[in-house]
Amino acid sequence: MTTTLPSPTVTRTIDARGSYCPGPLMELIRAIREAQVGDVLAVYSSDAGSKTDIPKWVEKAGHRLVALEARDGYDEIIVEKLR
Image 1 (cartoon, one colour):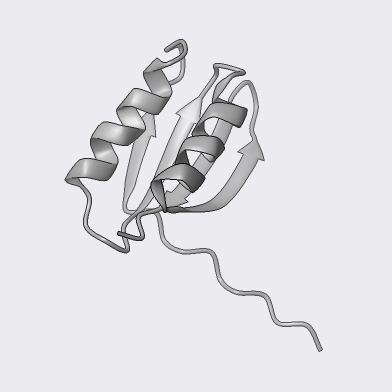
Image 2 (cartoon, helix red, strand yellow; image 1 turned 135 degrees about the vertical axis):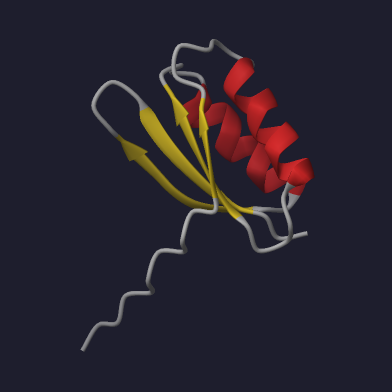
């Protein structure tokens, strides 16, 4: 039997579609600063660089990358604030 952990509920969505690097990352950093520990943020980004830049920053900053999903014309990057 396989158990799948439920996806955490997104508490804030940052729609950065149409914004270019480093815009989506800067918007995420601003939102993380305002968020509480345990909050889950979703970033919508149409900038290709976000797929690599945001996960690298999340790891360096000590948070958790929950998911990175390709959607129709953009990526959805879900991050949990850990500290």
